Length: 333
View (cartoon, rainbow, N blue to C red):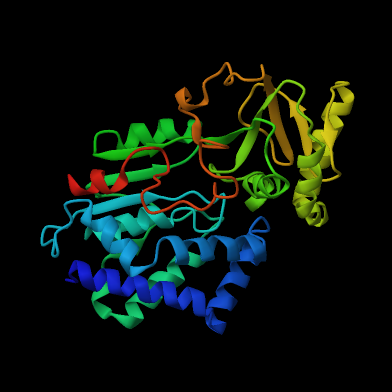
């Protein structure tokens, strides 16, 4: 059994490993990109860097654990089943991390889209410290667990509730993020907003898929800023989505704007397809009529007075995926 300080030290060492980027880790990242075409080399690197810098630092982990009742030793550890998504690289890492830091054991069902990266990292921990063996296992079916954390779509969440609802559980559904613009954004902030909308091809729950803008808003500066991601049009799967969405707009004679690699469409829906960003207007000087912070489908809000531009995909340890405090949940098991 490893005490809390030992677990934190191992995780900090893992952060160093990721930052040093040895050849074996480079090979694993390449394999992940080959397994899932949506995991571009750039996207994998961005996800790994965010984890190493924002999660796997000894002081950050200690402060995080100190905010909860995390005993140094947990002789009566529970087994927590984790169903992971696969929309962006290592998207389920935070859930695994919370279980590990809390001293419980995890049984993980990986997404077939992201089944390469995490097993390697767990293996490295076991190489450094044999006592880690048993803290994490991987399985296709999650049976005989004491609690569950499951992430999926609105549809799969119904099945999760059916199978896991009688146990302590966190069930996550579809979520996305929005930006509230006031027209005073600088050129630099718009480039950062392009990161919020485009990183990971816009497939993460923290990616901005809807812009709330004041009436008369000029979209040209943002479209120019988003040309930073013009290389996306060279990605076959992304281009297929763009061409398909453009064809639908043309057939429906629907107004749109584009910089050649992303489509801006006026639509009240906060979710948008890949390659499309929705927007809606609000009267100048007023907040959007649909209060974003009251919408349970919104993960985060970017803009002045909200999350800073460019940081949507830079969550900290206490930025929980659905507003439910995972560490608090685990501390009560």
